[in-house]
Image (cartoon, rainbow, N blue to C red; front, side, top):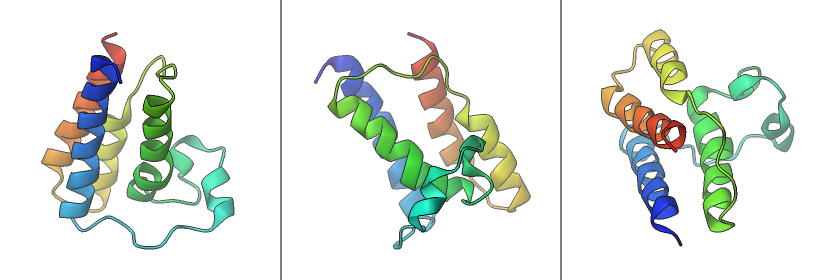
Length: 108
């Protein structure tokens, strides 16, 4: 694995760790049809944290494993800010981790 992918994997592990620490890691997968939404962040069928866990993280881990192309841009932190503010959840550490992922992907 290249250094770049290794750095990204570390950032993603921090996001996963934070989800678990915040007790937002789901034990059950959502229904299969919920994982095929065409809406941004699957907002019509998943919570933001479910989207992170079941769509974003697996896709990014698969991209790393396959040494695939990274997205052109990434703006997850602003969505996280809105979600956690609406849910009244203190998530500054999570937002920092997601902002780091955003910067990493955008600063190629």
